Image (cartoon, rainbow, N blue to C red):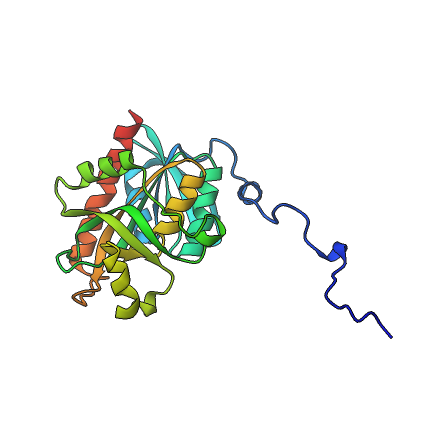
Length: 259
């Protein structure tokens, strides 16, 4: 009769290496070397925003194109800046953010979009995220349950000063969720009671991983819809107009921080 204890697994079948794949491993596979990426990066989820940046940069060179994400480094008024599409959802945002951090980027600014959680925040306004209520799944692998991702205040302040001159800008706590089609009153209203003024799908891992690498980071988000009023403006002229303003403004902000 065989051994009745079927719970034991031979040691040779268990993983013993510290990690299967590291960010450095992937960068090596993509042939990204030290100095290829700029000190500062402007990161978006949508590719059309990246194209807006590329139209304003000179001497652009593609750093890598992998997993559906492409990054470029060029110059703006003589200063090197990296731009690219850094994820639409939490898992891919975590991956790309870690690649940028490991690749030598020291300042990361997310230029994205969000849904408003206050009636007075309108489509075409901008929200600067100071902190995040974590509703994503990926950050649980990096930090403890009570961890609150937060922006670098200095960079958020610079964003506010830069954007508020000709845009309506709000700032405060936002919520990151993994479930776009499960934004129901039962889930959303308790988050609003915590103080969140907007919702997106990426800022929690973006802040968490940038913080883990001790990088400066912030996020400005164009408002595309409103969960309180039910308004949808994903393709609206107001949203496009504010994106067209945010692109050059954020380039100027990066420039000012490099001087």
